[in-house]
Image 1: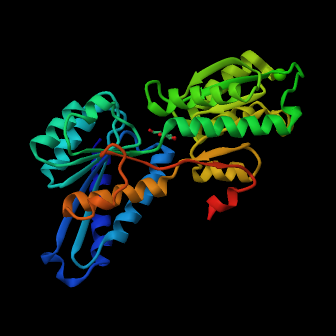
Image 2 (image 1 turned 90 degrees about the vertical axis):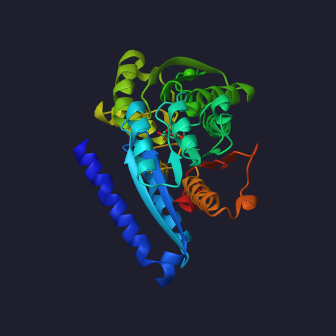
Image 3 (image 1 turned 180 degrees about the vertical axis):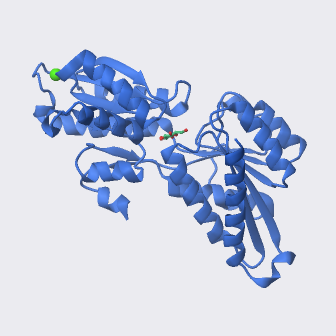
Length: 342
Ligand code: BGC
Ligand code: CA
């Protein structure tokens, strides 16, 4: 805990220094934005990449009369820790908060703290339920439409199956599959799985679910779950659907650990297009992924932070229902992966 605090403090210092260097002399007369960010778990690959983009976007928005500092904290999987961190961020003088909830069904404490101090909140990536979003008019959400990512994953799979009859290894006319799921209760876990499977069915693909493992978005947990499923279903598995790239990579790790040759490994699909995910598509280890637009999300977050504090530019934000900003997903295969690697 202590080490983390120090780490966070150093980070604040670095970012403010970096941002300070980029700005003009008249800073004291300009607007000051102090962004307070808390992540559910900074070990998360996708969020780590999103965080880097967010910092870049904020520094790009700096100018002679706009001084931006950022404090970033890691709740390390505990909602109570995150509630305390929000208080800490408010006490430290943050005038806008970006919250990546630990428990997306439990933001009430955070909302009331922010409301008492009149500090707007931008929730991101882990979407509060609509009832909570209605608690106050200074609550926003930036993310992506979970259903769209599942549909796109389903379309990628459907396409691959129709193009390659070798995927149905036992030639029974059905594709035997397993699912690696993200956290139970996360909007992107349940909805991605359902819509990917529905898309396959709607395309007339016969599928048979052998099993599933909940691996909480995590590569090592996915490797474990996958080892168990391979132990159980052996070579019957013809397709692995993973709710994110890290779990797809965990599935590959499992096959590698069990010494499967490349031709014996079934097709594996992820979602996110993280750096490692895109590399796996490029190498042909992952059949496809769906790009979760971290650059777009980070840009929208940075612009909204500035607009909320400076009270300028709100009309340029592209809201849905006045509170939500959703960035579109994109399909990635070996054919277009280089466009994303740049
Ligand atoms: C991403 C996952 C990530 C999760 C964290 C999802 O949108 O696809 O990779 O672990 O968000 O909340
Ligand atoms: Ca089959």
